[in-house]
Image (cartoon, rainbow, N blue to C red; front, side, top):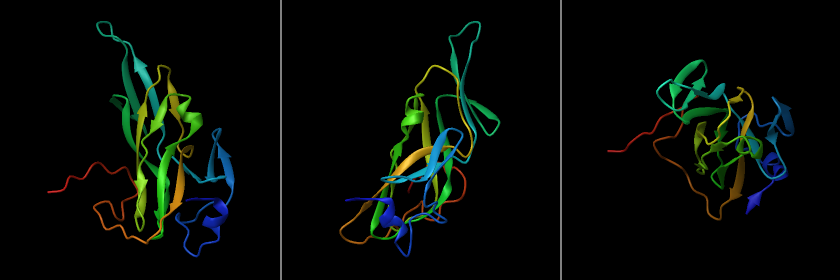
Length: 170
């Protein structure tokens, strides 16, 4: 069952530390508590762009907090800190505003009992320059109540306040 904002705000332990209890707007996008979930914000400033080379077709470039790299994929992080109760699971979904600009945020699952800052996997599918300002609402998290409590105890527990790359288990 998907739970709404009223359910999240009435809990003794909300899933987000310092959770905004209403929808706010910045840079033309919303963040905070929405009708059926919570809109999270992007910590880094990201620009997706193209550069023409004389001998090559357009190449895609990403600039994140002033550092450029080639490609269409980038790891970024959410401003919000999560402290998931053992009876809720969160699922990250795209925000329509950015999806209409060719931006996809991978649909990450936030496990019951997980704590930390969420790393976001962002892909650009468009063909025009797009800037996502730091602080913008970037994705929506829908929270689902699970039947039996669970406790996450994995490699991404207490994830740091920065984009964290893949951790491969031995």
